[in-house]
Image 1 (cartoon, rainbow, N blue to C red):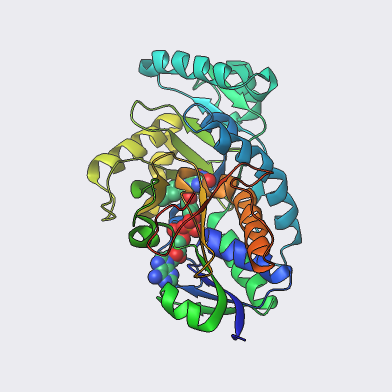
Image 2: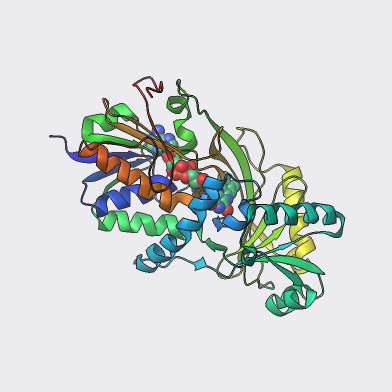
Length: 372
Ligand SMILES: Cc1cc2nc3c(=O)[nH]c(=O)nc-3n(C[C@H](O)[C@H](O)[C@H](O)COP(=O)(O)OP(=O)(O)OC[C@H]3O[C@@H](n4cnc5c(N)ncnc54)[C@H](O)[C@@H]3O)c2cc1C
């Protein structure tokens, strides 16, 4: 008998959530995280934490959109039970554009309509509705798109609340501790690899879906003169930019999306683009203070869906590929992972795809080769 039932390797978003769910189900869990208790160093620490399945449908896969809609009510339930407060807003989001991007807006509207059968998910707002709902934007935009089912979280409060619930559930947490599957296997019956981009080397051994990092940059600013009641998305020819209002006039502006595994600091070009989007939404942002700029890598598989892999012989499960949707989809991905782990631990048969959410569950051999 080993000391623990499960060792979770990586305590960013997915690792914390799944370790907590496993502990709730009665497993004895240990967690190793290279970054600190606050989550620094994870993609989750940089994220805007938008829960935006309607807008994301324009580019995301149908599976990701479905996981996003299923996850929203689960987040609501969990956040309400966390002993530590987490800011979660479900006021929808507003999409606006610069006059020179009118054609982009027309294309985006057509793509949204194509992606959604249900027209109530996207409403056209004229200037009067924008002025009523977002008084500080009065007179600034002739038209916008309102997506009522969208929301957002405070990413850092979520990471801290999860650290709190893990410790309350007696999960042994090793913060600022790099580990490897071999060390985990000595301590626990099963290992769950949630290293995100940090797991690239073992994820890319042989199996067909390959993991890469996609650079994202954000700014965190304090703008005491600006009040927005919901995230505002600014259409941009290179990437969607959100202005996500958190509590106390803190705004997260982002994120760029660049095909690069360079995680060095924010570039001047990206900084200019993020700040000009901000200034065009409201000139009062000109007096805001820049608190932080961050760049991180989103763990992305070539099919742009999440995937669960397992090696039953070596008692190793790995989950990855949350890409730009980790906050949006992690509740359903974590629950699916727990079901897979429980079936494996109880030696029950496993379906190829998780029946409820259709996430690929891929058996692999020790060197990562698919054994399907
Ligand atoms: C700029 C940016 C903006 C984003 N905005 C959004 C958004 O608005 N909405 C949304 O839904 N998603 C967003 N995302 C995506 C989201 O943050 C990711 O999908 C999510 O964080 C991935 O979760 P993860 O747990 O797989 O990886 P991570 O959150 O990166 O966690 C991985 C953890 O593993 C640890 N680790 C790595 N190697 C080891 C090791 N050897 N030993 C121990 N620990 C290790 C790391 O320290 C880290 O804590 C954004 C991402 C970025 C970068």
